Length: 204
Image (cartoon, rainbow, N blue to C red; front, side, top):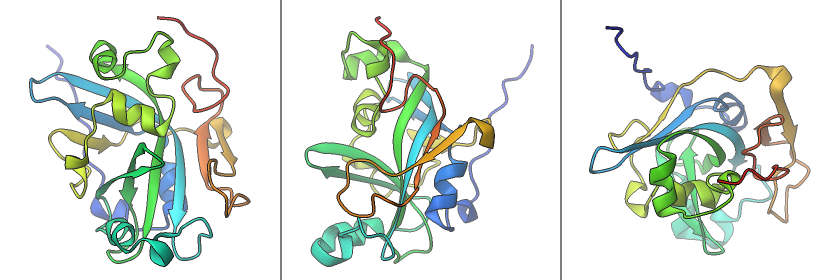
């Protein structure tokens, strides 16, 4: 019987870099959520955004929110969980500890456990499960308890997958921000139906 290969976790140095580069290279990676009862939900990362304070005009962490600044300054390879305008977001800390830099996971293509995802995010249109940063958090039942945990944890892990070649990657400005819109720091797998915009309807 063939033995199922388990991908090795990212080395710590992978995240201790420019978040723009990390955001690009995280396309194709796998986000895996293992519930307490052993059920597994996972998806491919198909859309990311980079944030890099203090050179990032959109980053208000250091100017207005001391608590948020401290959270974004956690060690590289650490999950960040915070709420923006009532929307829960999942990010990964980058650069060395003490510098507010991160990658936002914006969209996933489901790989396994869709029925379990529907328990946490009951929708009728299939694309609506994980096609946005708050949607994927809800569908995978990611809670604030994961804030500060390493990305290779037993219940939530970000693992390497098949990389997406440059010819299948689009680079755009970020969305939902008022400053720094001109920075091309959003990366997506071109044409993927699970992106946070431009999706066809796929009814369940």
